[in-house]
Every structure is written in C-alpha cells, then in structure tokens.
Image (cartoon, rainbow, N blue to C red):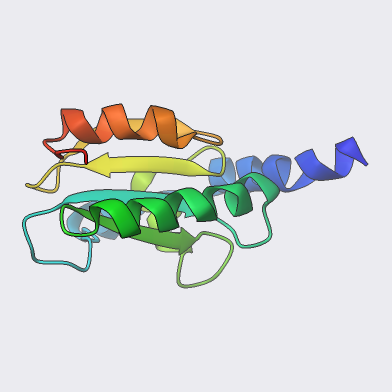
Length: 131
C-alpha cells in the first residue's frame, strides 16, 4: 500500500524530466489571474494526490483569513489545463507551493506538504499582515 502512494510522484517526476522546453515557452509567461495588489500562493498538485488533498484545508483557511491580501490558486498539473504551469514553474514533485510577491516575482518555493504554521511566516516575508 505504501508503494502505491509514491507511484504518482515517480510518474510525475518522469513526466516532468522527459518534457522539453520549447523556445516558445520562454516567450509566453502565464500570470496569476488577479490584477490586484496581492501576494499570490500557487499550489501545483493534483486532486488525486494524497498530500495535495491534505493542502486543501490549508488553502481554504488562507482564503478565509487572508483573502484580501493573498490570492490562492490551484493548478492540477495532471490535466491538460494544468500541464503548462508545471512546465512554467519547473516542478519536480507535487505538491509544490510557489509564492509570488505583489509584483509577480517568485520569492519562495516549497515541495511537499506545507503546514499552515510554516506557510504564514513565508507570507509575512511577502508583505502579508497576519491577523
């Protein structure tokens, strides 16, 4: 049973490592959907990934408590719509969390489950005022 949990991670690593970046990817930049002045938290994962599912309550808590300061985005990288984000951010494992400052620049990255107690200090570094 434990081996089955790691199978999706291994498959994703193979998929990501086997894809080549084309020259057109460097000219196309995918941006967060919001045009407001917020820090952006991007969760790259899959709805079928157990650690990714464990991140759902954390993302919901962030939206509830900090929604006016933080835009929370989720991309399922195992779908056609989410694959470009996996390539853009060069993810190796899921879940991966990307933190973008108010200018849209990445200032922190984390791989794996990320407890809320560890997420909030990273958000503070991006200028978020915690309750």
